[in-house]
Length: 386
Image (spheres, rainbow, N blue to C red):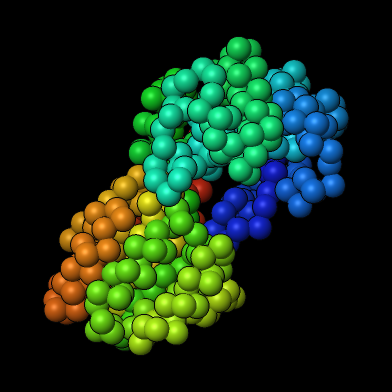
């Protein structure tokens, strides 16, 4: 099979760049030809805002380039991971005009929400869900905290809704969870075109011992990730169990303050992936305190691969990934007291925790290996071709 993957990428650990690279390698390892057409958001700073807005709506340059690529040799599928903002929806039309089927992975909620997160002012926001004109997003400058830039995103969404691009130009959408699938159906996307296929972890990092005696957070240090909830919970725990934090972001200063005043809280900054896996495997539990509708939560399945249970906020996709009292625990989103209580339960139930470790690893083996993912992906490609 010959596949053209389209990536408008950006540097976020666990985001599209890492996920797409793993998928490309998997396909190539299985003998498929994979070409990549891409751009990088680092270029945004070099483009005039007005030109960027027009390009976001329709890029003639990318339409022409992609169509030429597809006409030079036969392709079976164009798999788009992200066209926003530099490549534009013109890539769909290029594929269709060349007679090639289109698959789109839904890595965020951009089709339904200008900032792609369903998150504003520190809480979940669905003001634009199901609205033909995402006026609220423009009024609040939800994309890059810039009303003009958000208006450009809104114009792209409105035009392509008018053109029925999302319904007519894409043969199949891939959502990573059923939660995400249902949100897109609420937003007017055709249910019959949306399938669920999760991410995967490869190579298998192997099971850890869980003997480190600490809880672990891995991810961006940002409001939507629930860092304030995490730190408040540890303040209530009063040093009963160490907390290690891996990552960086806008709340770095707040994490530094917590480290200075709370015993047992350690901030390790960014770490290479092999060190991250090692620390996940030695952790007693991984914590996902997100306040927003994560589209997946890759770090959760990395934890399962290492046999480490996950305490996750009971919200969005991450709640779907974690089976309460089997592969981890749920807590009330944004509720530091409830998170602290769940951590107390982990500390006081070592037998149940040991069973959770076995169940977490089984969950990985049953759902999130490269082999399982390859079978699902090839089935999707085969269905859109027929």
